[in-house]
Length: 184
Ligand code: IMP
Ligand code: MG
Image (tube, rainbow, N blue to C red):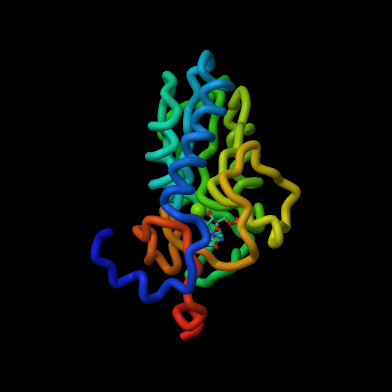
């Protein structure tokens, strides 16, 4: 285990590194079976997707391309503003392509319902949503993931790419922060 000065801020571990590896490999196999002959484009939602995306694409050994889109619906707090902004657009034309969206967490649904409409408007042949985490308790938009790694309770989680105020993305598991970290 690497030295860490982040662990002291973690209240509890929700999903361990071993559980993440196992589930991401399962998702990779399911995506292989569905997309092996479709030359899909994985579209990762920055920045939260970066670790999940790296593991997922290596677990899905198919001919495919990678793209990233930057979207932001958060300021620095722990709840969504509801307004989604494109901070970095796709670099590639996705017309008639099968798109696999890779997201860290489906929470209110504002981000993914915005993105799904955007990708359809850009002419995608299909849009499949893969989210590492699903927090259904806080849904505001009627949107469901096609593939979800883990359903999580209504707690603010960090690690494996997910941040609080841009910190804790490098925690190697999914954890819950001590409340005093974000209330001070
Ligand atoms: P939504 O638009 O409310 O579904 O939220 C999507 C985005 O909010 C995610 O991509 C995350 O970046 C962020 N988010 C939502 N819940 C959490 C959480 O518990 N921890 C860290 N980020 C979160
Ligand atoms: Mg995100």
